[in-house]
Length: 272
Image 1 (cartoon, one colour):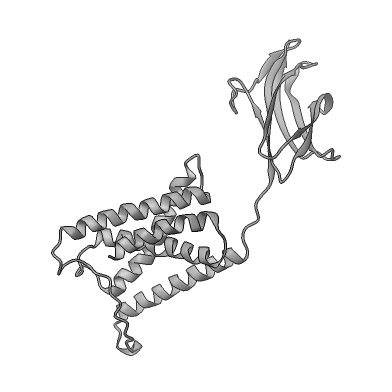
Image 2: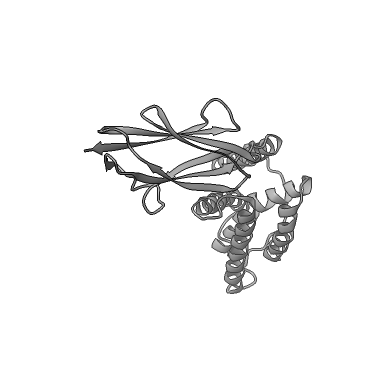
């Protein structure tokens, strides 16, 4: 019954967490992140009611929840979707459903008297009569719960501001960030691709100046790029003198500002 309740509440909470704001969203988010993953995994690992004590199950619920969330975040970080709200809202309920399914299956293979059943038998024991091991468990649990609540409260009260930036990059042969031209004969030309991705807060105007050894050779722009839009263009470079480590500098200016915003550099050996 407990696992079916968890499954029901989890999937009812998905649209609430995804599409609403407020206290209810925060409470459901805390329950789904701090309790349900660990409890469902603990139930799958220990379906027998004699496997663990109540205190040990409570400790494992929080510890396993943190473990599941950490591993899920690590896995999402290496996917194209990244650690964002929607992938998390999909991943965590799927894991909870998987753990609950395994727990239900393992419980069904036990006799009724051996199946773990959640029941609330609240009683308070004097601290002086509690064993040293249980005192350590209680202390760890209190620290975990308080730390989780404080961390979540701080995150909600002072969310990290979103970072805005421009991605200015240079591509070599095959449109990759490698295989850049390193050597050219005087009179010949080399080409690269310059690219810009606008992740600023608004549509931004850009200019690009191309310098060779500190002297301006050409300029590009101005051109406007909307938020989330990409721009790229092939650039032909023609060295004007012989020498090693001829430096091409690509200077990016934003919103017609006098100072360069970003810069890229390419060193080329020019031979006779």
